[in-house]
Amino acid sequence: MDFWDENLRRKTTEGALANYVANSDPDGGDHGLAERPQMAFAMCYVSAHYVLDLIGEEQAPGILDFCDDNLD
Image (cartoon, rainbow, N blue to C red; front, side, top):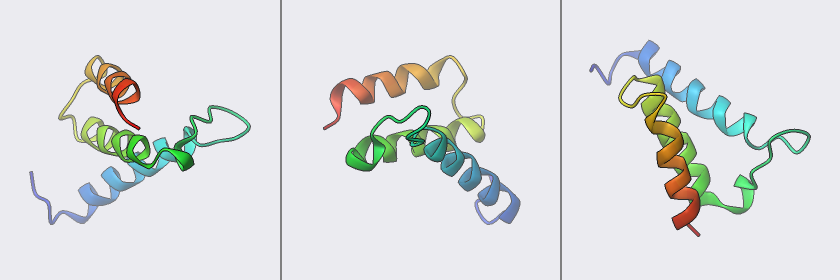
């Protein structure tokens, strides 16, 4: 994986931030991420790994559920 690849960095950053925004929408799926910075980080971290195909669609929800249960 080429970490200096600007397209790869942009894709990863946009994926993570889009997930954060989608899960912080007070009119939709607000998960209180503004008050839970560790969970916000975990969500962006897991999203970035999903975008990079380092984890699969089956693994991401389990990781986030674990974080939700054990962070804070």
